[in-house]
Every structure is written in C-alpha cells, then in structure tokens.
Amino acid sequence: MDQQILLKISGLSKKINTSSVLNDIFLTVKEGEIFGLLGPNGSGKTTLIKCIVGLIRPDSGSIQLNGLHISTSFEKAISSIGAIVENPEFYEYMTGRDHLKMAAAFYPAADSDRMKEVIELVNLGKAIDDRVSTYSLGMKQRLGIAGAVLHKPKLLILDEPQNGLDPAGMIELRTYIKLLQKNEGTTIICTSHLLNEMEDLCDRVAILKSGSVIHIHQLKQEGSSRIFIKAEPFNKARKLLSTHFSTIQKENGLYIAANAERIPEITRLLVANSLEVYSIYPVKKSLEEAFLEVTEGRVGE
Ligand SMILES: Nc1ncnc2c1ncn2[C@@H]1O[C@H](COP(=O)(O)OP(=O)(O)OP(=O)(O)O)[C@@H](O)[C@H]1O
Image (cartoon, rainbow, N blue to C red):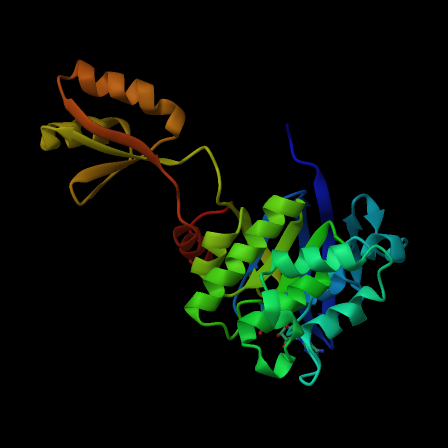
C-alpha cells in the first residue's frame, strides 16, 4: 500500500534581503519515513525548516501538514510537529527531568507515564535526575529529542543533530531516531551536510544546492539500476555482456547498467552461451555516487 503523504511543500521560495535563499521547492514527505535534507553550509536547509515550523514566512508557495495549510491552520498543523531547530538549549543548573517537566507543562497529553516512556526511549535512565551541566553533547541531544516528542508528534524535525557529536555519539543518536520511527511510527526530517550519516539514517534524501532541490534519492529501495556479475570464462562474459549493456569491469566482476528485473533474462543469456555463473545480484546506487552525479551535473533524478 502507498504510504500517505504527511508533508507537502509546493513552489516554496524565500528571499532574505535581496538574495534567493529558497527557490521553488517541491517536496513530499511520506508518513513513517526518515527523510533527509542534505546540502552544504548555506544551501538553505535551516531556512526551509524554519518555514515548515512557522519561524519565518515564505514569500510564495505552500506547506501542508496532514492536509492542513500551515499559513491558514497554523496552530492545528503545528501541534503535530516536534522540532529542534539549531542547538537544543538548556539551563545547565537544572536536571534533565526539570527540563522535561517544564516542556510537559505545554502539553496536556504529556503525563507522568509519557514522561517515563520518553526517558526510556532515549535511554537517559538515572542521568535524567542529574544536572544538565554533567551531560555530554550526545546526552543533551537525547534530552532535546525527549522534550520534542513528549506530545507524540507525527513529525519530528531535527536540524543538524549530529553537529559536534563524536562517532559513538552519532551511532547512538541514529539508534534512537530509528527507534522512534519503529516504536512510535514518527515521521522524521533530519538535516545534515554529512553524506554517510544520511545514507545510514534515512529512507529518502533530498539534495539541496543554493536553495534548490537538485535530486531526491531513494535509499531503501527494491529496484536497482546496476547488476554485478561474476561469470567464467571472464573475457568471454565481458565480450558478450558489453554487446548488450553498458559494462564496467571492477575487481573480479562486471557491473552492467540494467534493472534487477532483468536478472533471469541475463542469467539465461549467460547460460545459453556456455558461461559458468558464480554470482549475479543487483547493486544499489550509493548516495555518494548520486551526490557526485548531480553535483557534477551528469544526471537528473
Ligand atoms: N537571517 C538571515 N540574514 C541574512 N542571510 C541569511 C539569514 N538566514 C539565512 N541567510 C542566508 O541564507 C542562506 C541559507 O542559509 P541556511 O542557514 O538556511 O543554510 P543551511 O543549509 O542550513 O546552512 P548551515 O548548514 O550553515 O546552517 C545562507 O547563504 C545564509 O547566509
């Protein structure tokens, strides 16, 4: 079944002073997915997030959350969003629990059971009663997330949450974001300039450059545009395949440009030509490859 669209952005543009910071953005985010906004510094990620959460008003275009226009049904639409824009800020002398209590005061649904639930979800354990001054940056990020999901938002937005984290902190953060998606069905939008991190975390990624979406990359997909083949005799296989497909030789195998559905047909072709097939499987295009292709302007979506 097709996933429902939770967030729909159409024709969004924003100028700050005289420069265009967002240019005619079209995006849809599906319910339950982890969606990445990937782009270099200054590409417009934070500005786009600020438009979604109503911190700044776009010049044109529309943003709909669950079918509600942010511009006309702001309060209702925003009530299903939790967000951390830029760094989560805390009072160092207060405990993690004090902060959660303070945030819970805004949400009638955030009772003590929910508080317990979110503390478990981000695994703050006993540290929740320690002062924030004793927390690592990773713990602060997790406390920020706990506060942002107290009201069980449909959509959680995290702006560069990996900033300043060490590799272990990043792995930990990724684990909790994925847990939220799995256990609570939360849809998550996450911005970053870290390509590998986005690849490990997201289901889909939009690549931004100078305020425009230049590519949307599906990471967890069934289909594939390349197939890896190992067959013997190697030279005979290469000659045969290169007459039918665009072929690249790498290590001890061949990559051909074809979709996974063609594997049975290709296997038959190899066998009919008396080749021994040792391996044949689809290969997903990595985010890095897609990123290089679009930023070097070689292909579109
Ligand atoms: N309040 C502002 N005044 C002037 N220029 C701004 C303002 N906010 C953003 N910009 C400009 O808009 C562009 C996009 O900024 P934005 O912060 O959205 O990018 P970003 O992709 O989030 O980058 P970063 O990773 O550095 O936060 C930048 O060129 C920035 O200088």
